[in-house]
Length: 181
Length: 373
Image (cartoon, rainbow over all chains, first blue to last red):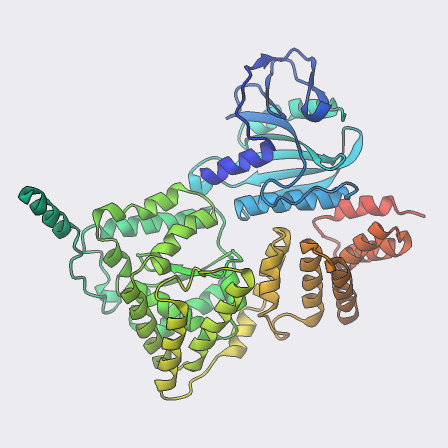
């Protein structure tokens, strides 16, 4: 449970500050993301800021959560995401963080180039086996793009059964609307 | 005041461990001490959790080899002790109270002979045959250790408390007993006594390279120096030469150094990579790949001078093993960073030729697209 929590905090947030704001209902409007980025929250979904992270969900973050954040360095390693790094190198660093945090309990189903916010980035599909906790398997769709001295990460995580496939199109729409600062 | 004293005495009496006989053979293996059955049930739960979480290193011939080795050490316990390999680069081993012995892949990579592995397995087996789990945990407040372990997930968190109960949590006397009786088993099985000392020396070297003050397998008590001295004395007093089984061991564990190095590289654990490279000989890892992994560890470390050293290591790897795909990827990316587009293209294209199923193929193809003349 502790490891899963750490994974969530990592995948999902560079900033761990407790949310101080209330949920705002989304009506398909563009909202401010981390570090002066912006994106469109799907209609019917709600969102809130937690420090420099934007959290978006429809039924509650325990069921499905989209998070957008900016990470200047690896959460676990502290290694900076250097300016000018290739998308493959940024993906390598990010995967190393995931592998380290979960001690190899993630399966990288896809690691490929992707365009994020109009720039070359990476796309990961990650499976997190939580059988040891007697919990369902989580799937994550994670997109990252280097920007200045850091990495923008947009992630979508949900239970593999039922929720992930159902809400993936909403994440893809949000991803398409993402604008870098 | 007198009443308080009586209560203290009663409390002490309640915590005192009963005398527990060791198992004599597989036929006497029974959880017949209070709380022991519970401890075994919890151990079974850990077995299931490790398996269902996909944390086992799946290599049936290797598992069978370790199992046969365990039976050679403990013939009268055939069927009662079960050995499995964990897909973890850690240098560690532990035993559950029910007789499941787990050896980490990192430990197998760090050792160099069957006799060295037998040293570890014999020590672990004694923890089971002499019921060190229940002897340590006969106090009611301690029986939930495994439950606590199960409530945590992940190899590290799951294993740490168990390992602690296996090798770090035992008393000085129980560790000494496991060392002494384990050594007797080693000699009786026909292994070379000096290999026991060499096993400890290698594990200590690995721990030193990782900067670990108290390596898990050795525990903190008795002090490592004392245990090494004790093994040296035991080895000096042992008769017969025995076999080391190095050739068989190298053959059976041939894939382990690469597995551990790849895991370290993926996790960017360059300290772990360098520790393994300091122990693995040419016979277990060809010089070309070894040079590549050294270069990769240096590249990941990124300290002053590491980039140049990494480049030199990659070039050495290329000279020694020109068909080793990963070297081409490393050199291609280095050339790309230097703006040497033509050379970068050559190396990256060669990488894909040599490793058509590379997991990062899509990234490399994209990089090649950007390098078209």
